[in-house]
Length: 345
Image (cartoon, rainbow, N blue to C red; front, side, top):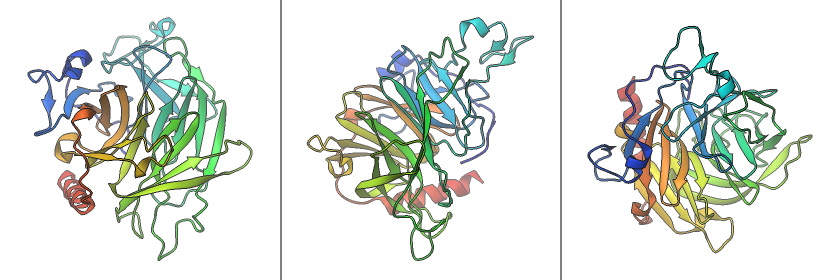
């Protein structure tokens, strides 16, 4: 998606601690579900949120980034969605409220990087992984991931990547794929498991205008910076539609993945990494309420934070996700997606 620098609409809805308890009189919720509106991010520079990740190193920090076309930078906010500015720079920059003589905070600059199409972000105990893997046209040959030693957002205005890891899909032979091959080489979802990176793909038919069902799970087995690293396909799942973000739970036992019309939860399949073959739970999302969900992160063991490209945050209690009944609803999701796009025009 694109459209950097769109205006914010509403105001903060409620404190995180209140919303995580799902107090109904302070939260706006999706009818019939546990999806609850948490906040609008009101900092103008966060203009098309495409990735979210809760820091494991620093308290009360959520990292996020914009989609393609933005500068190579990250923004850190607290759990109330308020942007974090290093204390020694507050005389020069302001946050959500404009201040005379100050410029808006430009975010944490990532030196030597480029945001071609940043689509997701992952963290572990030491690193931030920025996935420059967006490939809507299935024609890119410069895909890869930036590996960044996680900086302290309250102390650093700039950071340099430890390295860039170039990657490719070994199944792709032409750019874009030639008919009758489908376009299945776009990923907007990355997660990390025991130091290894994994990617879920977002599929199309024979062109960019043909959203399609299904996702593949790839693993990155090598992380060389001086050559292209082949991804290894390890699993597939036909019932998902347009996966746009994913993250492993803090205890490593559940994988959450989200698309525009549904939220998925996969249980650990006996300790192996074929996540898509494990028991699945599925929650239908009301796209008119949640919009285009592009990002996801775990807040705690039973709570997810999901965000859309209009800079809105929602929370979901994952224990309420119903078991997947093995009935595919991808055609329904496709219809809902197309109808929503038409209504937004």
